[in-house]
Image 1 (cartoon, rainbow, N blue to C red):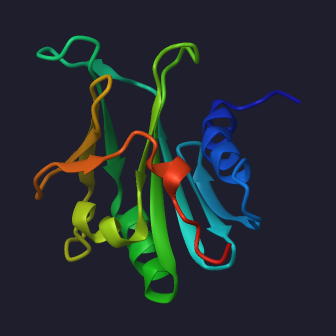
Image 2: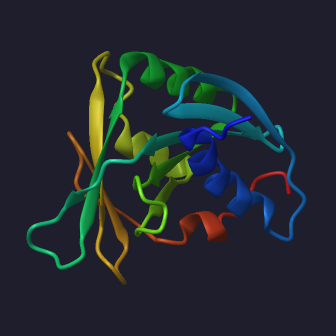
Amino acid sequence: MSIQQFELFHGAVLAKLMRSDRPIALRMIETKDEAWSVYTVNDEVELFIKVRTIASELSRERDGLSWQFVFTPEQISQIKNLSASKKVAIALVCGRQNIKDDMQIAFIEQDDVKDIIDFSVNTSQSLTVKYIPKKKLRVITNYTEEKLISQNALDKWIVPGS
């Protein structure tokens, strides 16, 4: 059986979670296409994983890259509905076609999700993740200022229920 590209990229997020020294229960609850899926972690958090494999070079920053993620109204609605009953975290996999190239995971914890997604509108929303070596990731949305995220935020995440 062949391995799909999204399985590799989702696997990067899931492997980081599972390699911690804390016990973690994981269950996939939904996937609509190869770009995103939702997983339940420890029956307490819904983890929304979205993948982008096309990066753009930053013109003003040496070795800097950016990835643009588009959230459809359906995805925004799903995140909003999920957050009504559980915490929701988002992992944006900033991938590359060549898996040997620089890649990042922009991990947005449950308290910060409302800062990057505007649940009051019913239109597509885009956000950009900017990577500059040795600096924090920058998440930029249509309506907020940059949100700085540690490059190892997922590694440091204290998973609820563990």
